[in-house]
Amino acid sequence: MSQDAAQRNSRAGLLFGLGAYGTWGLFPAFFPLLKPASAFEVLAHRIVWTLIFMLVVLAVVRRLGDLRRISGRVWLLLAAASALISMNWVIYIYAVSNGHVVDAALGYFINPLVSVLLGMLLFRERLNRMQMVALVIAVAAVGVLVVEVGAPPWIGLGLAFSFGLYGVVKKIVPTDPRVSVGVEAGLAAPFAIAYLAVLGWAGTGQFLSNGGWHIVLTVLAGPLTAIPLLFFAAAAQRLALVTLGLLMYLNPAMQMTWGVVVGHEPMPTARWVGFALIWVALAVFTTDAVRRARRAPSVVEPAQITVVEHQGVAEFVGEGDSQGTPRDGDR
Image (spheres, rainbow, N blue to C red):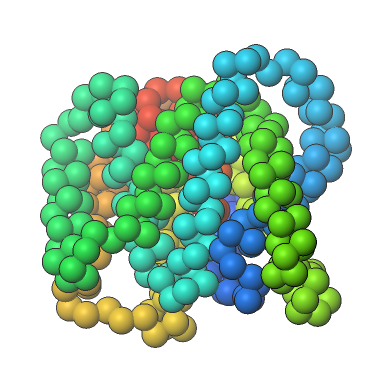
């Protein structure tokens, strides 16, 4: 590839990455628009419309045939992934619809560190000194937040661990990300459809009760789930994983800004201290990732990348390890 072509490729990757993370960062502005629907009703619609959208995408890219080649073991793994991402989605929807956007941002700030912890516990990965320091600082930050709130930050921890475990499952699933997201939505769809049917029978569903604009926004929850993931997949093919990993922090930074500036959520001094400690931990973690990436080979084949989706928040994992940072880790 010529230098000009490489630069164009890199610029396109940066735009795709900004599009993905920027869209996810604006989700706190979108999901409250679906009120008065509950978090579970929004989750059910998100699953159904994501499935429909992904079936169209798979048909266009001619990947529907991949479904016949999925083994029984992979089906079980995708079922676990479906349950974990559904749990993550409902926690997130509840948070941004009920004035807990800052708590949701906390979850995405600490998620890379949770991924490191899970890598150590589940894959017996050895942490270097800087990674251990980052984890200790993060634990101290959570301790400060517990003291400030009087209880663990369940929303942030729930988002971080549900998506961290989702990343663990997706790390070992040898399936195209477009196919896997479609399958995950398909496995959850029967439960979502049954739930929506019960709401309709009881007359408590909100889908048809709040005008045409509400219907349009609810349907858009599907494409808005899938499109940033497709942007992310395109970015992952064009950018170094270090660059992609650094872009990841754009999402929680935007969410926290929204929660504080637009949502006027309380930020007492102790909460600022807790977040400051998280940022210090991330700075240590990211510095270590960049340092190691500079020593690693600069070329990463697209086949080495598995895209993992969340709320979204998606992530990426290389074949090297599972820690949630470029090549030396990932989410």
